[in-house]
Image 1 (cartoon, rainbow, N blue to C red):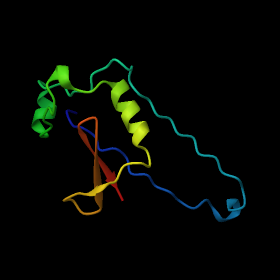
Image 2 (image 1 turned 60 degrees about the horizontal axis):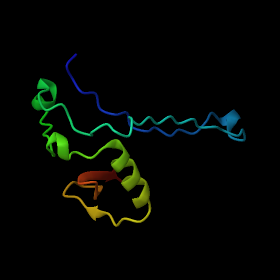
Image 3 (image 1 turned 90 degrees about the vertical axis):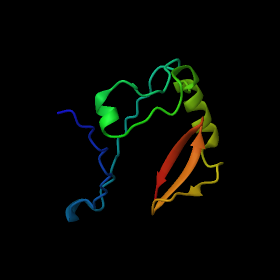
Image 4 (image 1 turned 120 degrees about the vertical axis):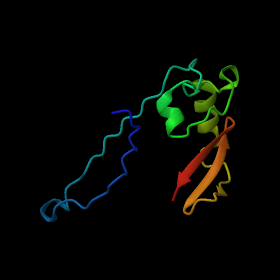
Length: 103
């Protein structure tokens, strides 16, 4: 289809009336790439070019998954978020990459 799908919005809904008292369980799955993978977009991708994705680093300067994971984990709850120019969004910089927090 040559489009990049948007990530789905989280939709939290109340359970049906007859299930309000039941214990509920949420299952979440997150996957990360191998630690040695460089986190750089495919610069020659026509799809990424068409939607305006630009390479922020030279391939050899892009952070690895390991560097990203460790810095992101170390900053959890420690960093001070800065207001973005976009409404309802705050930002922080992790391993040289701007990370948006949607509130």
